[in-house]
Amino acid sequence: MTTPLLMFVILALPCYSAPGQINRFGLPVSAHSRDFYVRSPRDQVCASVNIDILEFTCCEGERHEGAGQSCCGKRSFNLIQASCCDGQLTPHVSQLVSDCCGSRAYDPLNQLCCDLQILTRTQPHSKCCGKELYNNDHQLCCGHIIKGRKVLTKMSRHHLCCGDHQFDPRSHCCCHITYPLNPQPLNASCCAPAIQKGPHPPPAQTVQNKIIAQSSPNCMPGEKPCGQSACFNPITERCCVNPTCLQGQSYSHDQTCCEGTLSHTPGHYHSASCGSKVYNPDIKTCCCGKLSNKVLGVNLCCGTTPYGVEDRRVLCCKQTLHHVVVDGYQCSPGGLLYRPSHEIVCGSQVHRSDPGKHCCGEETYYPQYEICCNGHKHHRLRNVSCCGWKAYDPSSGQMKCCAGTLYNLQVQDRLSGEAQCCGSVLMEAGSTQTCCSAPGLDLLYPTQPGFACCGHRYANASLWSCCAGVLHPRPEPHNTTKNVIPGPRLLPLGDLKTEVLCHSRVLVGTVESVSMNLNEWSITMVNAMYMQASRGHVSAVPSPHYVTLPDHCSFPELVPGNTYILVKNYFSDTIRFISDLSDDSYPLRSILTMC
Ligand SMILES: *[C@@H]1O[C@H](CO)[C@@H](O)[C@H](O)[C@H]1NC(C)=O
Ligand SMILES: *[C@@H]1O[C@H](CO)[C@@H](O)[C@H](O)[C@H]1NC(C)=O
Ligand SMILES: *[C@@H]1O[C@H](CO)[C@@H](O)[C@H](O)[C@H]1NC(C)=O
Ligand SMILES: *[C@@H]1O[C@H](CO)[C@@H](O)[C@H](O)[C@H]1NC(C)=O
View 1: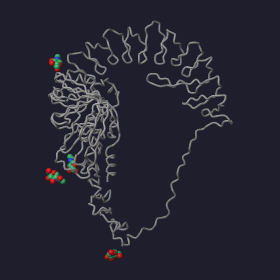
View 2: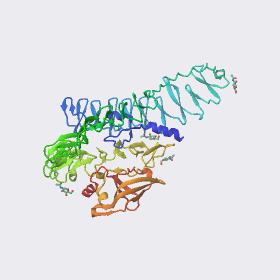
View 3: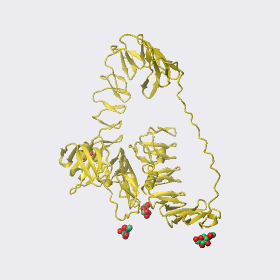
View 4: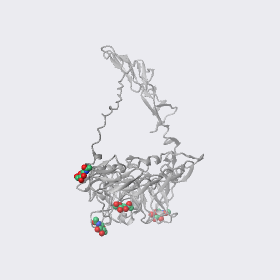
């Protein structure tokens, strides 16, 4: 029983996994989302007008507010919040979990698409029968594909379809002679064993796969092949073979190979030469496949050019030889020539240096007066922080930063204390939306009674049970009138209430490993500390620190290497809140500034 159900689950949850800005860890997502993944960088020209790709998205020549959106025809959408089928948008169903039913999207976990109609799944393993649903276990889908199918309740587990009817093959046969098809008792003439068909047709001719043997030259006795066309005598000669073109050349023992190696130039690879050359190292120097006359002391290679270590007039940066006229030049880590006493290298740009000047992306900035957010500089006002590439003042309460996307709460008439994020999306007020999270992916769904999150999926809890982010079909519909109690959700730090974060004793630490022990998670943490920020109390905890989380099924998945805050309930040892700090570059500072 388990196997077919399991297979069904695998079929129902497509396995296309796309890592990207939205789904960093490459969770399995809908195969259709592949077409809508935003591939950066995007066009900066929209209908022959330049656009700022940090603010806008261009879809078939139409400009839309919002960076990094996906396109559905000329319209833009956020694939966390909508789906595109046949150029039509369906809101409230994420493209990452949806499938298309004609031009409408649906969630195959809780729904089925039968004959272009979206039906509610009533069983984890429901199937389509024409426009209806049926359940393989106790129902049959009989009838004609064109004239209409109908659902019959199986009279026994042996029953099979015969036209519009069902029959028991132990007592009846399906008579193919009469029409419409009809079950007949086994002793009826129609049920006599069919005339044996002629001999089986000859098996389809198997195409003989011609084995393409590595063509090797015919060599004299005592010789060995060298590449595909030459031979060499291993006693007196050696073989130079360039692996990229498989040409061989033999040479005598006082000679050696000059191989063209792959040299890396920024942006592209090129191979210096194909086919290694034979040369005498006493009179020639080989640099990257190029031969030069040998000069004593000149024994280093810079790309294809030989040079000497004592030559102070040249400097080799990333295989490019520079002639320098004054001292004090250096290579930057990116391979640019610059003078540290006068210049500063930011990315691929060399700028004049100045006391107090630092790099911000390709530009320079003054950290005293400016703040650098993802390579973009802004004036340093009081209390300023970064949100993506923008700067804002978190203490003002007017703005909310959701995973690098900044929202103006005043425009939306919202209070900062109530605003909650689901990944990079600001959730609607109230409880109309539910946020389901798996490591690295947060999806928003319209709240439905009887549904519960399972990782990033939102499933009808009477059909599916969930353990540690993995869905399991329920053999029997489950009575969900007992409310589904969700485990603690992974909250962004900014959504933890200050009375919780600041006034209780919280555990902050980096998860080193997670293992399961009799339905409990056993977690080892390193770099752990207890903190009560309002009192300024911080105490280090011996490393590793062991934490046990009861009921592993309801607990969100913790990723080794990520840093978390765990807030326990006062009187029991259970976890009340949990927050993943890994996206925060300065978690301790963020906690302390919130308190
Ligand atoms: C959830 O599943 C139950 C049990 O099959 C079904 O009756 C109900 O309609 C489903 N609810 C939704 C909203 O799909
Ligand atoms: C088939 O068998 C049933 C009883 O088993 C009998 O009543 C019926 O007459 C038989 N029919 C034929 C065509 O032999
Ligand atoms: C900066 O933040 C602190 C603490 O949140 C607050 O007291 C102060 O008024 C803020 N300053 C400005 C200029 O907003
Ligand atoms: C499901 O719950 C309802 C309401 O509590 C109850 O009336 C019903 O008998 C339950 N059904 C089953 C199968 O437990």
